[in-house]
Length: 491
Ligand code: HDE
Image (cartoon, rainbow, N blue to C red; front, side, top):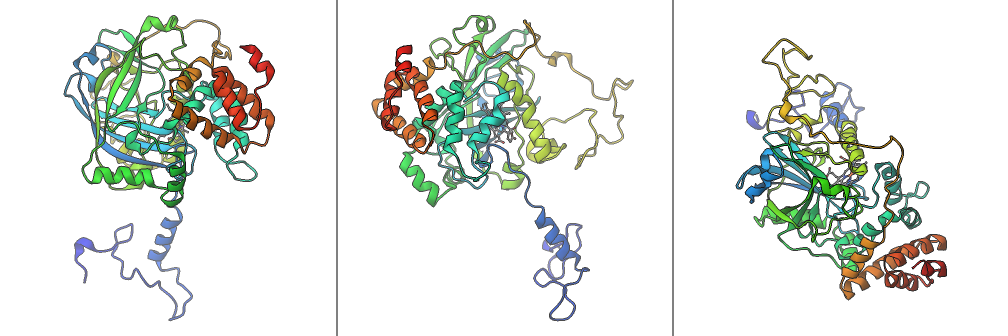
């Protein structure tokens, strides 16, 4: 007889007598429906897969600690976890690629997700960013179309470069990010060797109620390194899980990766007059105008024990704010505030916040009840409505109300007024060393070569040319084309 402590049981806890031979009528079968252990085992297996993330499906995660290193940060935000030097907060991070499926290769040219959950004493604060400070588009309404072009052709189920460049060439606001992506940072050496950015502008509010605009920059203490494109291609074929493996092994052997968090702070009123719309996620703020201020250090020091339970089921959402940190009017961010928790209700269920990796450190105390998989006691015998006459039931805290701000104008579908998609993309091109420019041109030409429509290629070449004539001319030459005269005359 087996020791009671390691006895195999069914899901309902009954000991299993035989896990190798199913119950059959006679030696040859057929099988018996009364083999409830077999039925349960198969039925559970049949339901193992949940929908993968519609973007960022392939990823790796780790736990760590974030520690504040600068007392001055409380001048800008009342967020409790940033309140004083030395304050440490547990966190979880998930790194990911964007376009590939959950089994796809790690070393592809693609932005990387850099999504953090801080388990603060005032609830979870999620900063769901990328390894790039900018994005391809600036209005959430374009996102599903954009992602369709990054995924597979509806007929062939193949990746389709015509779709990719057709969309980009019709969406010139993507040029800055397209340039970033085809440069050396487009294929990070490892997850440890890349920076992370909040990308959007967020709003911080201090204890006096003063608001500021803020951008987050996590700078890798390992340094920033890229992979040579041909090496990356080879690794994609031989070890598609290369980045996942690197992260796990580094933490496993105690070589804990860390990042220093800096912020750029913009005084609230500057947003009205800054040379770039500070809520346009296709643009950066100059570091000269708004220098980086150090905030703290994030160190990853623990691997998850179970990939599905922790990394697959983590629900990271830009809608998870804590007092002192709020949304900005950025039209991309506004769409994201809906989309993440919405997809998580579909992917994980309406009660996904109860899954251990998502559970806040403090207690969730509210009047929401019921729904599939409610497993936390569901509020017990407490009443489930408000207002009520009972002091012991949860009450709102008016110090946690959002900081009001003025809005103006008409409700309308309005594009961003700024159509300069070229200055910052050109600046990035000119900032690259000669060698990096060569690699950028190679990467762009290699990616655009399979495009079968010359019209699409020429439309995109015009955008490169507008960013920098050298950039456009070299891409055109690489494709055996010429920059159209009317584009040259625009200058
Ligand atoms: Fe996401 N994005 N996104 N995204 N995103 C998701 O949420 C979406 C955007 C980012 O490790 C989804 O839980 C919309 C920008 C990361 O679990 C989904 C828009 C940035 C992750 C979604 C954007 C990101 C996601 C899919 C345009 C960088 C992985 C599964 C308005 C600042 C998080 C999920 C993780 C995941 C929607 C644009 C980063 C569908 C609608 C900009 C790192 O909700």
